[in-house]
Amino acid sequence: MLDWFNYYGHVCISFELLSLSTFDFLKENNYLPYPISQIRHMAQQICRAACFLHDNKLTHTDLKPENILFVNSDYTLMYNAEKKCNERRIKDTAVRLIDFGSATFDHEHHSAVISTRHYRAPEVIMDLGWSHPCDVWSIGCILFEYYEGFTLFQTHDSKEHLAMMERIQGPIPQRMIQRSRKLKYFHCGRLDWNECSKTGRYVKAKCKPLKKYMLSHGTEHQLFFDLLERMLEYEPSKRISLSSALRHPFFHPLKSAD
Image 1 (cartoon, rainbow, N blue to C red):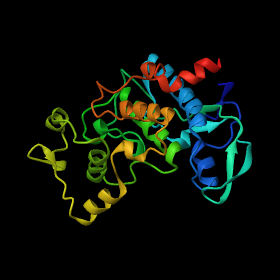
Image 2 (cartoon, rainbow, N blue to C red):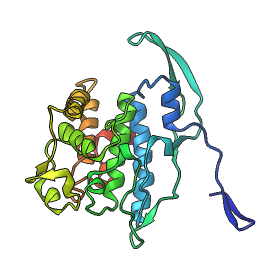
Image 3 (tube, one colour):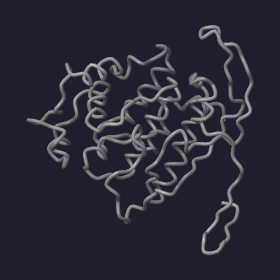
Image 4 (cartoon, rainbow, N blue to C red):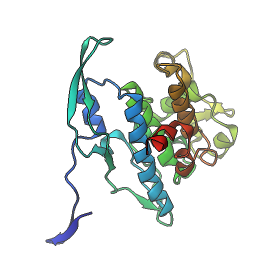
């Protein structure tokens, strides 16, 4: 925050002038994914920013690529031989986290539904209550999108969303199902889902186990997916914290660069 002022009862806050969001850059680049070295630097900054919030007893609740802005979105053009098209390569991967309109302190009322659909954690969908770990889930979804160029959970329906999670991350833990207030999504302790239905076939075609999305089996890609798996852990209490995530080996090259 640079300054603030009151304008006829409206509190106005001024910030540094930022550039394109990471989503808009992706869109203008024909949804070509970011290189993994750039994802690493962006991920570290996002984790640090959200970790700062968590340390101060705040949950952002609306983390998504649209709310992460480049400080400067200048780019170079290079030819992508594999895709046979020109590709924009961002020059500077410095980013800022924005939009704290839905940020919630630990002691404040927690709305039942938070987060934009594609980045919504399972505990939110299942009405189990939420805290800082829901931001970690959202970051996992964001980083996947940077890596692939498309959203991990392409759906607008809660039960279908849970079915996609099971296809990607395996069965939802029984403990969570038993505690869920959303009984309409389950039957006999399992997700009430018909794989042979039209939507069932859609999910089967759209989704696959997480590690099958790897674009390479190189070490940095394996480390990246290990981090993603920890961020996309069903149980909030078992999900990696952002302070631990920042110590993950995926980020080690940045430390050696310092």
